Length: 80
Image 1: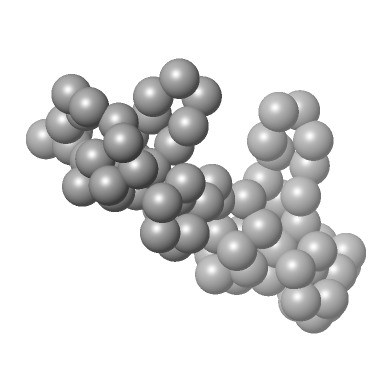
Image 2 (image 1 turned 180 degrees about the vertical axis):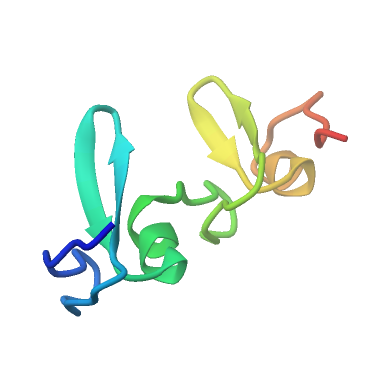
């Protein structure tokens, strides 16, 4: 795709930019790094960007069951 719109994270205009549609809204990025920074959810416990499966409990998302346990959640397991 030849997209000349600037990356919404860093503002770079790149001839190989791409568009990610999330919840019906298009987002233009020049790299996966910028897309992750803008769109990946954040762990409720350690504040890292969740780029894998993560775990969820009652609307909260965590990067892993270990962080969920530290935040007081019980019974969550990492996906295998």
